[in-house]
Length: 287
Image 1 (cartoon, rainbow, N blue to C red):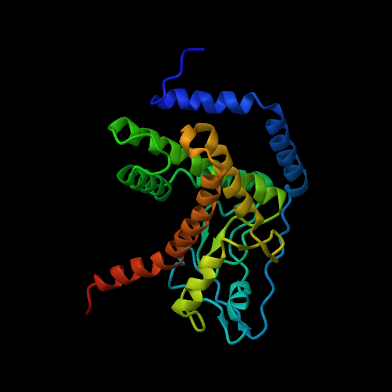
Image 2 (cartoon, rainbow, N blue to C red):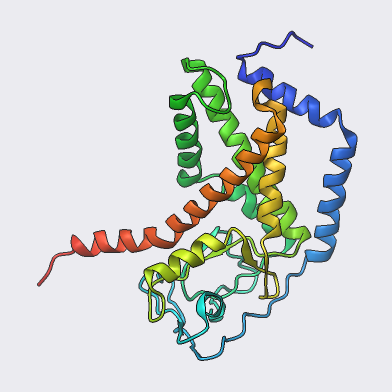
């Protein structure tokens, strides 16, 4: 094997794969979890979420439904009742909804274990995903913060590569492996505007989806898939991060920071459609 150079991204990628393959027990654990998930989750339950008490059922959305879709209203009961008041969707059988964010009113969109893995990879090939990695790498480069690759042009490339690798591994762990193992739904269901859906109500709902999620059968659970996915991706990052960034304390700090940034990302998913709709409506010609 050629001598590794500290600032060579290719060398660091080689180190990553060599380190993983040199630990067969890690591969065995991942394989066993994946196999168990595939066996148990090939047929996700097709039942939809039940109506919450005192909730008006939403109108079925059209193919172009978005932020204007009529959403269920919760008269009492708080965020969880409003979150549960999702009507049956119009996704045809055999047509899984392979997008991370589900618009208001579409209902529960169950996925098999294989479809969850597909979603975990498809979600990385988007402008939003790359923009997130680019912003994170740029912010780290400007502040010369973790990971400490330096401040030259090559260091920025290493940071960008590390950010992409970390986010891709987190998506694989959270939306693919652990979502299948824990039988959890990896989608984010936008609450959207409507009666009983005030800004504060929606903001709290979005922020708490990092900790709470739906299960495959429409129930509610602690978001084990997301939390363990973040923990796993941060632990894996110690393989390709510089030695000075591999302390346990820094890994734990990064884990909690990622919880916060994930919550902010969900806030963006919740409210960005409103902003886009407002901008488009403002520029529409009036009679």
